[in-house]
Length: 278
Image (tube, rainbow, N blue to C red; front, side, top):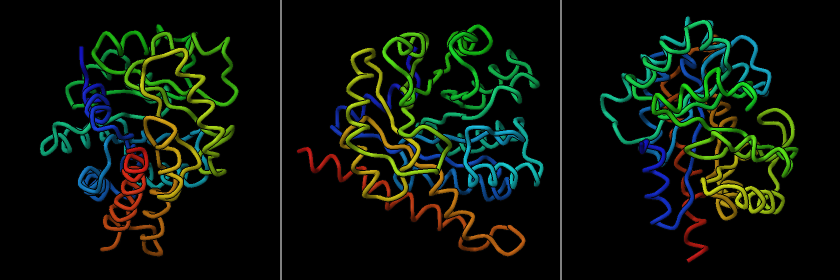
């Protein structure tokens, strides 16, 4: 079964360019503004959207994304409302791949079978659940694949050749390579080290490899796009959103535009990688 993710990566491959993958937190700074931001992303050049599920204990996230999750929780964002946001987004956009990224706890509480059915109906294409290792595949990964959703795995600089086959076993859609050891937004990605890592992972899989963590500028996005099948940017977009809020942390007239403008600049960086290769 082909998902929107598979279709999008096949299209990009035929165009000879890398994907630009954006991450924003669902419900940040409020559900209505969040929906406007998500709608603006494809128009600004995002090829794939990752939507964060707000959670109280996001251990892999740096301070910016943690704060975004807390802003969303404060205005009452839930997993159910995250799926509603996806449904509303799909009313106008039936082609942009959308991945939910987060932690297992909210899904477990929601109920795995119910969640997968509701996610599929809402228009979710894939899941990145950072705290479920391959040893727990029966919990969510296998059921998700059976439900027709991609299950996207993280590989890191510490994932060695012995561990990779387990990580890749039930992965689909793409592989998310975490360019630095540590939390999101902590350091800058080194394009040369990333190039070596991507080449190593490609010896084990035919899936596209997207690289995230530590990409904040159009130049960095371009450098990574020259080495990988996609550049993922999250913290920089979340920071742009935060910097547009008023003193009480509420959306202003600048909020949607702040994210859209940075998205457009980063997308140009990623697209510039293709021109360099031609």
